[in-house]
Image 1 (cartoon, rainbow, N blue to C red):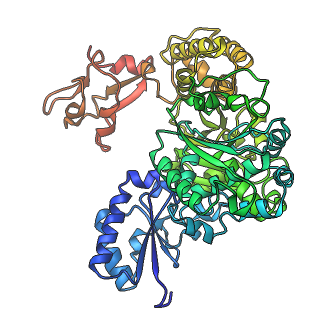
Image 2: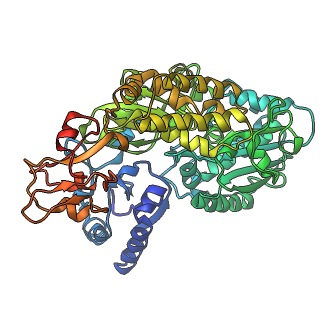
Image 3: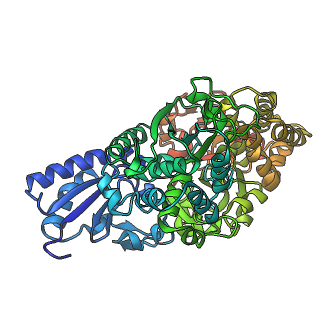
Length: 613
């Protein structure tokens, strides 16, 4: 870096970093730069999610490409004095690899170097509140090309030729949907951006809207032009306040620059865009329920046909696309369909975006070419399983996704391969599990979510998922009976084939895949009253080994119910009728003693050491 180059400090204000108080770091940086009179040398920029949430809060320094991780309030003064004034970077804040190597540049960190960023290319690198930043990286070139060089039919063909499949979960060809909308009779049509992301562990759409909102608005305008719509909606959940604020600013700025409104960019095409905040019902992610919500009615699915492209919002032809689908459309119109189709696989072109969470070293936003394997994502990008534990399963596709075991690690990630394995791409959640995870408990967790979020309109979903949940609770509590697993499978079939919408049709996936790949765990719960992972509370017991107890009192001090009992210098015990199995005693027992044990509740050892009652 030469003396004339200005240092740009990019402070991540994505959800992960913001929860780690990055907004306070931004304020303190600004204060220090002002105090040291470095305004002509240092520029501080707010950015959206940089991606590596595990290391939050993060700060990137350009043009050097340096990357500071887990920056604390006390580190700011040192960064300013050492780096900005003396030119000596603070090496202790560099990313540390599992091998203990300090990596200064984010491009050299495997989490980034193993990705292929297309939709996320701008995320963490431009100020989402600056339309000029977006224009500087080619923003709105796709819309400009569409309006000035192409007919609506040619735009539809561009997206159709690209092979883009909807990124909302189903993978329906986006170009075909646009063509159906274009060819639908009638002069009044609507385009909708579905930003009602509600999957547990998923934060891709919200992060894109915060970090790069103009890419989505550009894609929405392109879609509206292609299908002949003069009105569009962005439907975003109210629980995403940062995304709502980002969209409002982007809508205001893009309107002032004539990227929507009357006679866009001097063309004959006019478009009005509305921002609609949903109340947070998971079912409103289903397109017909979403449209009902926009119309002011209760968000409940309706039977199809007719499909939205025939009769959608207020009975008019409507095309609904996910956030990532529209962001991809912007890129396709800017770079061309041939470029886009060169990425990924023949049947699933482009990239896949995941929120990688769970028992993995590097959690965060990940974008890889379609066809990358689960192993690539979890071990190359994600850095492998935390604490060097054994990989057990990965759940893809949100609460209605499937759980895939270790033997599926080399499965290519694309719409068709995942579906064949019993999982789904979904909107892009990916949760990694290790050997401490109980698969029966996992199935119960995800099913409880979909059961609670069921709108209740159709009986198979409303009652079928409830009955499945009751059986899973029986099994987890050691009350399972022969035939319960078969009953679960029968109910799964009923719910899949009888439910009205995708929520119910896919709700059994976690149960189906955990039974298919981890049936031995179900049988252990039912036949042996044992939870192999030692997770299900009714099937475990905490006891104190009298031969190891040092009477330190740590367990007694932390026990919330008084179950851990004993006096100074007297061996402690756990009174079982008071124990709520929170595990606090197990966590605080000194490693050298290792006296508190977590054991199967019905084991011989449990009967021997059981503790007082």
